[in-house]
Amino acid sequence: MILVTGANGFLGHFVLHELVNQKYKVAALTRQNITSINHPFINWINSDIRDRDLYNKMPEPISAIIHLASSLSLDESTVMDNDIAGMENLLKLWQQGPFVFISSTNVYGEIQKIPITEEHITEPLEWYGYGKLLCEKILEDEARKSPKGPYVIFRPPFIIGLHDLFKQSIIGKIIKRAIENKTIQVPSPKNSGHSWVDAQFAAQSIVQALNTKESCVCNMTNGFITWKLLAEKIIALTESISSIHKTSNINAEIPLCLEERNFSGKQFEKHFDKISFTSLDETLEAIIINLYKCS
Image 1 (cartoon, rainbow, N blue to C red):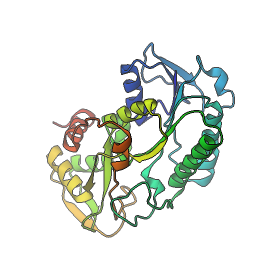
Image 2: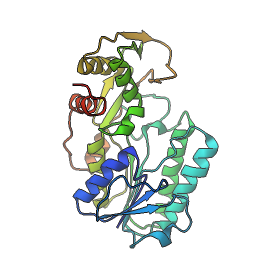
Image 3: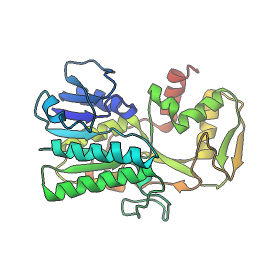
């Protein structure tokens, strides 16, 4: 049985579907007592990653852990009390099999060299990124002290997929502005932009990692796009009359990075089979039609 934390989250939705499709039994952890997917293979457990009695709540022995849950907080005490304490508690539950942890490209901090590889210096600029990096270190230390199975750490950039929670993302907010025909501000540096990954691709990669024999840390990316080109694509797909305004300031409402956050996927390709994914245009079009009811 596979333990999945953050099972009710954005990425958790795609991971659960992929696990069920591949006939895995799942213990799906949720704090809200809400079951987003009902299936005979899924055992929903109303609990928290910090629950010290979590082991006794498992319906069967755990053969692997997929850790997706995150506070998504920038607050130090929240990160320490939730994310770090939660990781430490999950490692007590880890007895055998792979441990797959979803980290973030935020661990890198200020970009010094493009493309950004896994060897790039890790100096996070905020507590969300620092919390992810600290969780990585805790996992790696535990694996060295007490080998129980391989670990896989994925560092995804922006995850794009057809789910209601996507509306809350930065790209979701850009789509909303385009639909409302409002001006879209993008950073003035020519190459400012970000890498992205398709949610279904990410889910398939995570499930494939359950079969890995070797521990690894991998960026997870399908490509890179500048903010200006992304805005142009969204305006075209929504048939908007929005204008694009270049600025040297970071918008507090839609905080787009000023630099080129272009992440290398070579390490991922080395460890995992190539998985097909839909193009950015196809994914955005599906989101706009189905989530925003634009056609």
